[in-house]
Each structure stands twice: as C-alpha cells, then as structure tokens.
Image (cartoon, rainbow, N blue to C red):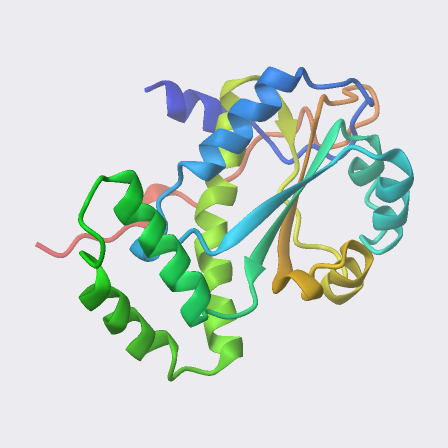
Length: 210
C-alpha cells in the first residue's frame, strides 16, 4: 500500500534548507486538508498560509526557536473556530443545500438539532471540538506532503495566544491549533534524518474484541 510506504518514509523534519516548494504541490497539500472529513461537514477551521520571511521570523521567537518555522518554504497554521454559532452553522448548511441543488430549508431540521447541541455548550468545549476536527485535516496534509516528497514538521510547540495576537486570529473568531512547516530537509544538519523510525509494536497498539 503506497500510503504505508509514505508514512514509513516521512519524518518530522528538524532542519530545513530554505528551498521553495512548488506552488502546485502546496496547493495539493492544502486541497487534501480541505477535502478531509469533519463532523457534520462543518469544516470549523481555516488554514493560514505564510510565506513572508519577516512574519516567519516573528513566529519562530514564539515557537521555542524551532528553526523550521523560518527555514521552511510555506508555513501552514491550522486555526479552529473559537465557538459554534448560529450564523456559522447556518451558513455552512445553507451552502451545502445550494451546492447539492436541494430545496431551500431541506436541512433546517438537522440545523436545529446541531444548534440545540452546540448552542447549549460552553464556548471552550466547542472550541476543543472544532480543534479536534482541524487535526483530521492536519493529518491529511501531513500524509499528502509525504506522498509529494515534501518534508513537513507537525508542530504544537508554540505560544498559541501570542500567535493568535500576531496574526489577528481572535478578531476573526479563530484560535491557532497546530502549525505545519513545509519545505525540504537539510540532511547534513538534521539530527533526526537517519535515525530509525520507532513506533510501538502492533501487539501493544491494537487489541481485538471478537
């Protein structure tokens, strides 16, 4: 299976060489994230693409000085909705109805059911749920990068509040969740590149209930 080969070959690149990733590959990686499944099809997150060097230099200082942030070609920031709102849910379901050519109001009952669930929950709990959805797309982007021979570094090690402020995310009703630097490895200076990939053995990872 080609995907398993890709997953075995990819690794969290620790040092990148600054080489630019072709735009068609970046677009394909983003499209993989866009096509990812999400709960109720709401896609409660956005992907911010950063190539500006000065901005990446600011971000690296709030990312524990992980140099991939500034040495990468494109930095993807996955930012989730800060809450589920009537407006957001209505907008997405109305768009779905329109795209499928269904009669107006077709999904109203389903919309009301979602609103009865999300509308009664704490905003922080709703954000956590939205963040979980963004991780699905995050994983798809990582796999797509591997298939395209683009190196990537899944990254949670950053000051999310500081990043939100820097990018003005809170004003957009968003909160940063993860980052994904895309680029190409600096094999001579990356301490991880030649180390064996280690995962727990299958018998310690899976159990079957017959």
